[in-house]
Length: 180
Image 1 (tube, rainbow, N blue to C red):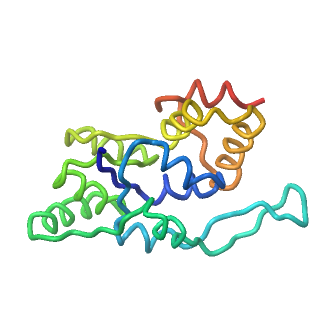
Image 2: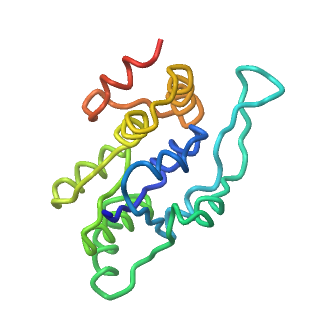
């Protein structure tokens, strides 16, 4: 299987869906979670079961994904990776994005992110990039959820994670065509 690293923005989007484990599991990658990303993913929004249309901010719990071996912790392990991390850290405000790109470049991994700057920089460095819409599409094609479930996943990502794909992203048209 292909190795991949996931950035905080993409992970938060998938956590908001309520289907992160199954989406990541069906994507065909062995997922790695940089320690910097783990530090950045502190809270997620969830629908408030007591008030329709409201949401709650709750601590993010990544332990089920780690326990199920869906996510594997990682960090720079040598001077070359630390040098790449330093180079990327000068470009990004986020240590998570910098660590994702550094590890991906060093180890030949795919990068999952929804950050347009990270996508542009990563592609410029010759890295393979994938986004939340692409991961959700793979899951939808593989698992074939009902239209109601798929719409709920997309809507929850948009409302709870506050992510809507940019028109330049792969699967933008697919995503938008699935919403009412």
